[in-house]
Structure formats: structure tokens, C-alpha cells
Length: 139
Image (cartoon, rainbow, N blue to C red; front, side, top):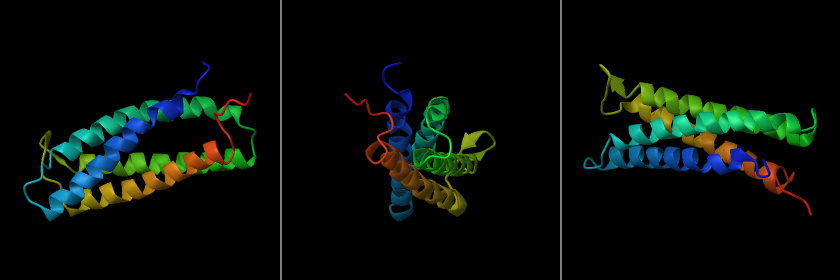
């Protein structure tokens, strides 16, 4: 392909997970906020993030092993996988008897931890593009 797929896909889980965490925090503060919406957003984010992660893994061998971009890509990958794991844990904690239930404090903690890891992954992804020029076509 002429355009890397990974950067095109990551916007969806970033948006879904960020909104899920915002909704979680809003629901803690204001009781009228929907508590089902974050679970739906996390589910969508987990599904699209899985596809984005596979696309990133396919593009990873293009980097020179041991180089600075390769090291930063591995940090990015670790943080993204950590975010995925935190949001998956938060989502699992929201299920009871196969149905979404109001999240407990631990589900909210995992949501916030996921957002922190997601922010780090985004920072490192930005570094890959804007510092190392990964995925940028040079004329």
C-alpha cells in the first residue's frame, strides 16, 4: 500500500477510549450520565484497536532493528498494549450475568489507567512520525 494503515486506524480507539473515560468520570460526578455508553465505546475501541495493532505489527519490520525509531516503536507498542489491557479489564468488570452493569470503582480505575497509557502511546506515536519521520513519504 502507498499509505500506512496503522495511523489511519488509531484515531477510532483513541476517540472511543478517551470518550469512555470522560463518560466514566462524568458519571461519577453527575448521577444522570449514562453508564452504558462507556462500555459500548470501550468495546468499539477494543475491536478497532486490535486491527490497528495488527497493522502496526505488520509495519514494524520496516524499521531497522536496534535503531532509535525501533526502540520508540517498541515503547509505543508496550503503552498501546497496556491501554488495550486496561480497557479490556475495565470492560470485563462491567459485566455481570452477561449484561453491562454500573461500573464499580475498580472498573473506573482501569479506565483512567488505560487513558494514561493511551496518552503515552499517542505521545510515542507522535514522536515516531514527527521526530523520526516514520510513515512520511520524502520527495
